[in-house]
Length: 186
Image (cartoon, rainbow, N blue to C red; front, side, top):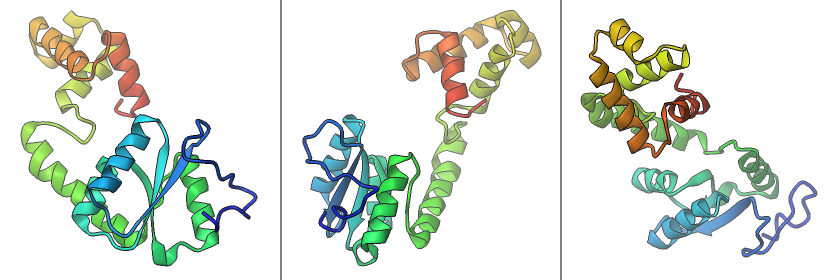
């Protein structure tokens, strides 16, 4: 953290400070201890920048799943790059080296093709049918109108809505539409 102290755009705080928005996690490799730290930071609503010596595809996927918001290789962590990465992560952007980004995107594509699509889901966690029903609700359609428009029974529409609200822990159909809008699904 000595590289960050002289940087005017970054304020270095202690680990326990509640004002921490970005935590820099430095490690040689991504092991279970690092993953636990990332999960803990995610629960605290603190974004994590991982600075690591080496990382493979599986570790990259595990780190993303555990809440990593950005990644730098230790060899590339100059004062300038580290400060830029911290600021990017603080703004809600991510930062990943280009070669790792390509590998990560390939992994996401494989998950979509091999796991989600065969089960009727998208990366959003909702099926096309669920998204279409939420889109129609957002357009002001009631249950009967949705059933007619999509050639479903009203019972099917109600079951789909119930499944979505239960699975995503949403309160009602309005909350489901708001969630879908915020997530960019509709």
